[in-house]
Image (cartoon, rainbow, N blue to C red):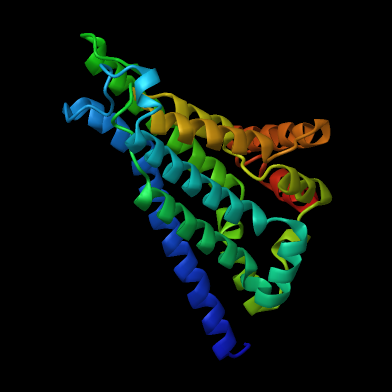
Length: 275
């Protein structure tokens, strides 16, 4: 049995810190982008916008323009961090510097950038809402419908992340394999799986788009968030016919596995070895 070295302990602690930070940030992001906005509508708190102010006046208001500028800056800061570290030249340099911890560093800095965005985000309350459902009985029913749909979307997102090897996405699996001398876990996957991972950076695009746009009240700052992140999600992947065919095969194999787990156990093991 191989002895545990100080380096192995350092790698494991770093990966654990990343896991905790990403988990906490993910929970905060769900609250920030989804349930806080819905609860505000249900709680009857102060309105998120001023419908009495015309757009021509609101867009010349210094308070509104300052809040919009801060929010746009925060979105740009997050996207620059998230994309710059994934850019091949920068990625190669970071891999040379951090080694097996690169993925953990990438996830940790992404969580930090997202925390900055959420902490310093400026609500725009001095401008009209794009829409606001306030007519009874939909002022109660529509927020409840949004809550249910948001909950389902987040449940689907969590399940997709688990299917896409969540420990590897966070860099935990890389550290584990490094400590055991097994190499890079991504290199153990098939070429088709590696190709899919390279093209599909955000496997939860449809669910996030639903969460971003489906709200009972839609103020100006939410429009900025939804438009910017929607464009970022859509432009961040480049699936083609081969990737879609691979996904269909994987989906069929998963459905066969759950429909006949005992009979298909040997077949599923063979499938994992080849795909």
